[in-house]
Image (tube, rainbow, N blue to C red; front, side, top):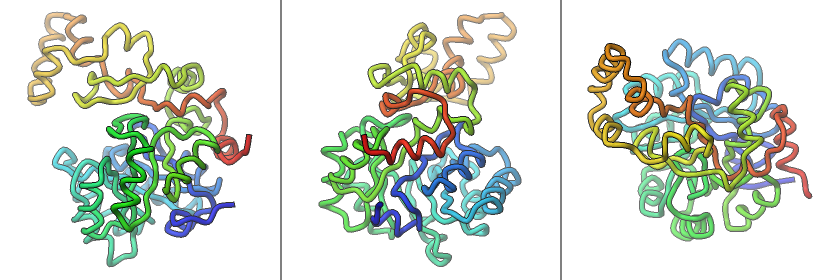
Amino acid sequence: MYDTALTRLLGIEYPIIMAPMFLVSDTNMAIAAIESGISACIPAHNYRTDVAFREAIQTVRASTKGSLGINLITNKSNIHYESQLKTCVELKVDYIITSLGSPEKVINACKPHGIKVICDVIDEVYAQKVEAMGADALIAVNDIAGGHAGKLSPEVLIPLLVKNCKIPVISAGGVGNRKQMDYMISLGVCGVSIGSPFIATTEAPVNQAYKQAIVDYGAKDIVMTTKISGTPCAVINTPYLQEIGTEQNWLEKFLNNNKTLKKWVKMLTFYKGMKALEKAAMGATYQTVWCAGQSIEDVHSIRPIKEVVADLLAIK
């Protein structure tokens, strides 16, 4: 059905990557996605120890022969970066998606082993930099992606990257059906990275309330919040989010600039029983505020991943 630079690069049947989702993607999801003819990428950050991380990769490898990727945070905030990269190389994952930092070290480590390196980008300047470093492909993160989205629309970002870069471009954000996927491909990409629709699946490890929210809410319910990390993040506008607001208060901004003080705030709230302060300063987390993109518009039930993939490929 499809023969694109992405299907050839990763050896997959359909030009789709199940996007890496923090605290969502796991081995069961990856196995189901790969067996459905697409690729799956898991954030290394979803595992607290190297032992657990290795076991996850080995579990997927033992269960399926398809294309498995790992998402690595490559800036200083990731204290496990070196060990995660070493594990990826030793276990020879198929590819690594880099985020939030220079991919140069990853590229240099992976090239000798044939491991592909794909880089998240939000503009052509950074895209050209990673291409010059030797990246194999780009993920164009647009302004309708879930989680930490880009700044440009797919109509602006994709042609910009295709025109200024020679390596394949993959689109991330705003795809929940076949028509939308084909539209992104018509703009010049070789495939798509899709996350949010896969949250409402039987394999996803998140709680039932989060899954049901993906079903019950739509594109109009996606808003940007700085409450989680200080950086704008696309989330579902639930009653809880409406209650706490979408902008950081003074305490959250203060803590975001000096995270070592968080333990003292925790001590204070515990000692004083200041629940209001606790909720304001530490209530908004990836567990309590649910990341998602506008592609949830096309999610109408909780289903197995194979059915989500089949629906993405269906012509309606």
